[in-house]
Image 1 (cartoon, rainbow, N blue to C red):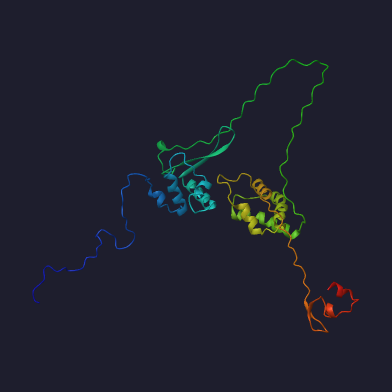
Image 2: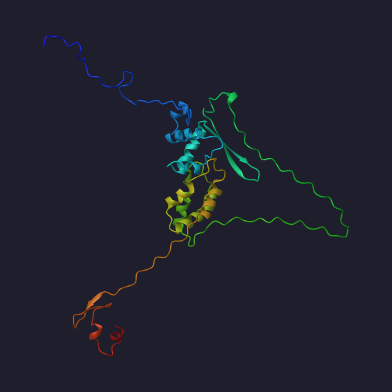
Length: 302
């Protein structure tokens, strides 16, 4: 017992390497040789970007050129909704990871051209920076008029044909105007800028759109539901004419009137006959049809 055991271990091994930190995350690295993307920490650890914006930024950088990254396409690839995805794209555009421009393609259709930067545009060297220039609408040259022989002096000159202006769809109107409902509609329109600063309306626009909102309220739509309909899924490139956009939504998305509620059929209460004590249904107490006289019209009806 007095001999020292030189082969005995001084302490038990923990099974953890000495380079592993005592707390926090531990990485198990694997060298990728295919299907990987290099992402800078300036994006993955950006303090001013939300986690949704960081994830969408990494996803966009992992896609090949020509891949679709529209809001509806991204919403189909992840559980986030279109509103959250649109806000994340605006964050990436604000911090220089995306540049979006509108271009007019052959045929007259407008498309959104998006350029993704793996380094913020503000810190990227000038020699490697390529910023798409916005497309400028150039006037289409008019064809030269065909010269014809002059008409005889006696022929009267034809009067110019006035241009026909096709009016747009009229705004909905309430069937029964109500002052309280109109005030609620005006307050709802004036307060839209609290939910989105791009929806600033003038006093004239509020007076013009208030009857349309009153028509929604008259059809049983709550003010909060009207507000959500007017502020949801706004264009990511901005709102140039807020009043025109709101008028279009109030006209095209107007719900139908609520169906009329049918009243339940009236059922007479149970009564006890004053003579035979038999139960029967009648609006008032009295004799049952069997105990009534033969010439009583209620007996025949019963």
